[in-house]
Length: 113
Image (cartoon, rainbow, N blue to C red; front, side):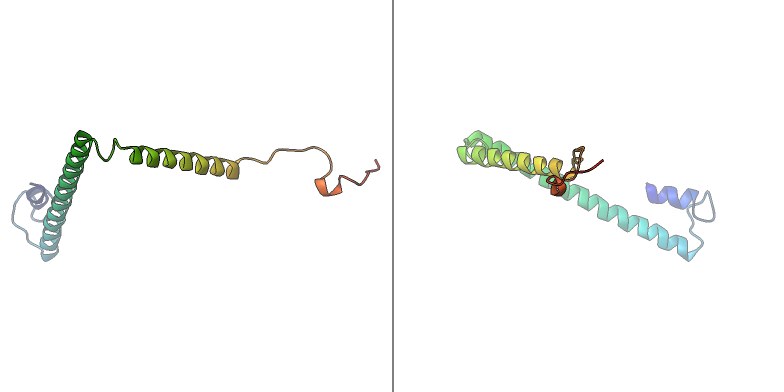
């Protein structure tokens, strides 16, 4: 459908399905190939998603996998590690606190003033 629209509306002669220039023919072929590749990729992604959802449903139904204590321990450890990493990043990017007075290395010196 897109190829027909490209040929009819944008390739010379306009409002005709005839393709006059070789470059326009190359563009139409490139569009057909890109659409076929994209269709295949989307189809395989859909199949993988459906397979993963079915595997998850089977694992939940059997009581193994996602409901097991091993998975729960692993997910809790992952949450703890994520919280530690997030806290470290927040500490890294927090603004330094302003401390009035002399710098710490000169704290033993008395300023005259």
